[in-house]
Image (cartoon, rainbow, N blue to C red; front, side, top):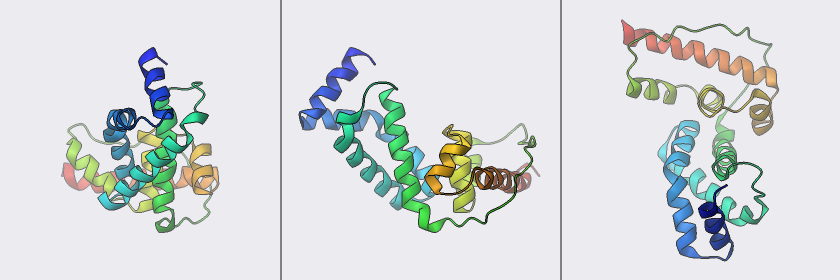
Length: 172
């Protein structure tokens, strides 16, 4: 952690509103994108972002600097986004899925891909986003969602298959 970040954290801990706004402004866009990808709509994403940053500021004194501040904030915000949509996600306990490579095509429009991910059912979209985009492990996802690692893996596999099917229409 660099000296500027330490100073910013110190000022935030002293309830310096300008510092808190600076910290919020530094990470809000990246964290909103995470929330939107997990939640799938602006209202839930905005609520998760707001609740997440409230938790960040309430717990900033517990940040020990053993990880990057951005990583710490990212974890809090991801958990808030999952909590925001948790009631909308339904999982069946499933057996392990075999990991296979999926052909995403070569000329894939980014906006179309983003929309195709957003159109996935909430459970598939959340796990796909957390695993493939945000880099969480199945163990972490399982803990966040109170499901088994096997269910996380299977939902990811099925989400990828659904996404691949949706993208076939785009390529044709």
